[in-house]
Image (cartoon, rainbow over all chains, first blue to last red; front, side):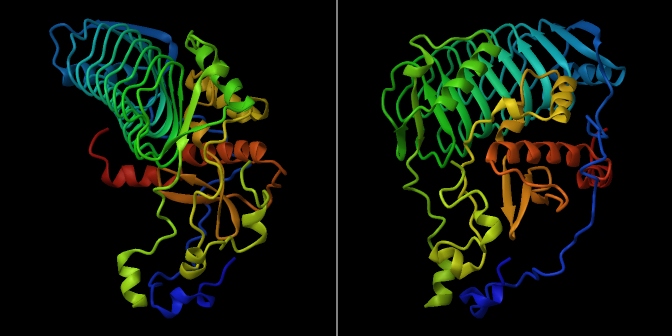
Length: 280
Length: 130
């Protein structure tokens, strides 16, 4: 381990944090613990099924009903007539099979961590924003900022999506069966995006990291987005991932275009203004 | 390739490669390939059980988990505590990144599922909802 006192930063007084003697508390045993769920989640059974009609319910009531059913141990829930209401099925931190039979409004399925959700209709803006884990499959089209700031899991739209798909994506996989609009992958930081159709203007603009695969044409690339070589591991992963959702690249996986960050905007090695002041 | 300088670069050296790193006295992350796609032949039995339990067809969010290094020790980053979880010394590290990543994934899931995870205590103290 490096000794910080050997470096210029020490003399410059940049280390106010005491690095030695930090907590070494043992929180768990890596070789013994075999839990499969977080302690605060509901113990549900996928074999127990429930269904309710949301036509006359407000968004909050729909979400409360889903939660109550999970508390009672139901692991497979179908919601009929969600009626394009906003913020439905948000904040689910549980394993669950959920079918939303209809369309959703804005911010549907946001902030989820674990469930498998299928939406038979369309979704509005920011579907599955900040999703942490699980799968969300939209059978028709989606609005803008599909998967905004997604951190993990698989988010699939079998139709086309609007602009700024995966804006600020920090992980996970976004799959679009059709086309995607302008500024898709804007400021992407990690994760993967697969678009089987065409991509609009400024694809991958200012992306820091992550990978974008495009099956059709690209209107143009954004700042610092560059074409990279497809590897056998890429092709194998794409084939396996697409097959999970019954999708195929129209011109073959090997002919998809891979986009990554050119890393010309990376400034990790540059000094912060406050550090410059210390030197000067 | 995880690191052109070798898989053990951050274990066998101080990891301070650039002038900036030397000056601040610590490694800047993003030196290894965070985009490496997982090799599903290396999935461990525990991870298989976890995937089945969740009802997912594959590793899902764990595809983004890789083994990293903190202060010269192998570690995995836990997004829930915004910190590194050190790999215990008794666990032997394989000589390839794919197997190391699977160990990191298993370790992270076990840590997150533990009743002693810091998030459990935080939730108890600050949680607004059931």
